[in-house]
Image 1 (tube, rainbow, N blue to C red):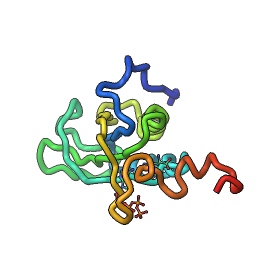
Image 2: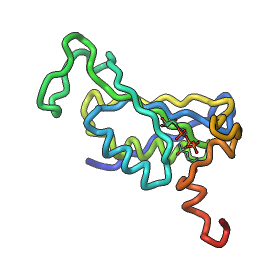
Image 3: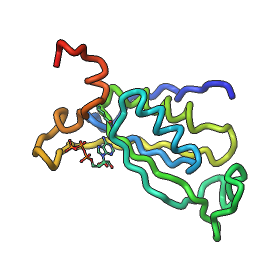
Image 4: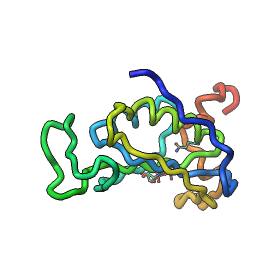
Length: 146
Ligand code: ATP
Ligand code: GLN
């Protein structure tokens, strides 16, 4: 399958420091997507089992072997990843690379501006709360910076 990238954007509105990348994907592609995200330092991910209706309609997943939709909705996984603005495009391209089959039903990605991030354990907000141990900032810094 040829590699494709997301087409360029005019810019995000509204402007925010953080965005939620919300991807509705084929369930059986999730392990591959999350492993690839982990390798690029994305450690904070939330997934939910959802059911949806798009161009694929009620056609069940052929690749899955068994049919798991009893009505017109198809089982999907919603993956939500809050990242800083400068990580958004890399995350989108990685999701496309790992989730795409080229067939109808590959899914869709929504980009949502996030007003703030608050870490419950510490009360930290903003960049401090969004940054994660083992995340990109740690991957880029040498041990002497720590
Ligand atoms: P702590 O350092 O206190 O453990 P943390 O930032 O690692 O805080 P968790 O408390 O481990 O956060 O996160 C709880 C849940 O929140 C995770 O299991 C995940 O579902 C979700 N989550 C955390 N960060 C993100 C993120 N950046 N994007 C999406 N979901 C996230
Ligand atoms: N931006 C965070 C970091 O670089 C990671 C965000 C995430 O894992 N969703 O540490």
